[in-house]
Length: 153
Image (cartoon, rainbow, N blue to C red; front, side):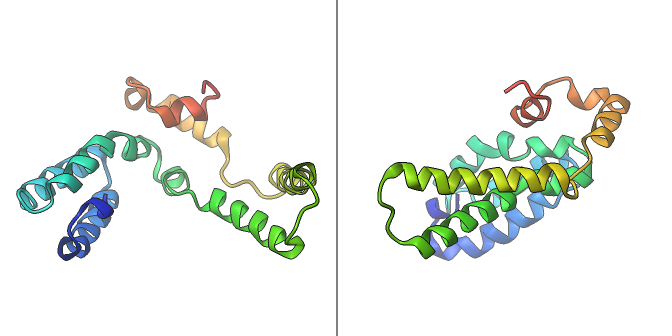
């Protein structure tokens, strides 16, 4: 979205976006978007169009409990795994063939899988499912992220 905006408006848009995504509810976030769209009308129309097209997807985690929202709204876990793959690839530098690269990546993924199974959990899904049962009104219109969480991808 920032890439679609003129450079002079990027700082303003970034600050406003932080406020929108820090909202406590989805309704507050949408109201913040409307306010931003009015403020930027005629200045960053393309950026506002990009934001409007992706806003529903970006706010899909807002229906979740705050405890889960932060972790599911970011890709930090995936980025960390990708960085670890890159780090190990730089050590080897040149792979003799594609299969050797796949073996390295597969071994790293298997190692990470072991850590996730045996180590501390990123979040406790049992607590999430209990919370979900207590708040059925939040799940009337299913979003992509909820489908993935429930194993119905």
